[in-house]
Length: 193
Image (cartoon, rainbow, N blue to C red; front, side):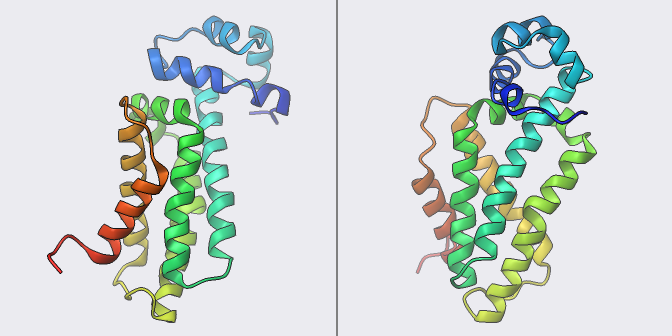
């Protein structure tokens, strides 16, 4: 895939709306051109097809998650404080890109077969959160876990599925409410206190 100019990238969320509503298979490249205002020939110049457009949109979203997570992990505060900030940041990025996230639901099997997406999730989220979990154990704000990578994967899944559940229903994604709920379950559990 070629480097995508900003003026093209900025219009591609219109394609995500189509993918979310119709699915990738039922969306024609002509539909994408009409929805985005990007000429069909230009789309084919930058992308081999619709799957590459979807991959670009997912990669762009993951890059925003990576930027937020890296800033937080490298920032100040206890491991627990930064972990709460990571949860909030992931929810915020997903709330800012609802169509891309809804398209992901419909194309989850296809996205899972995109190696670049799996690699990006590892780099954007699993690795820095694993580091953060270890830092939190070292500073005493989090308990040490036997497998920080598995904990990072579980956390990513909990946040992602929580956000996607709201994004595919009529309910508004209230970032603070969801982040607070995940925080409470994560830090205090569901057992009576």
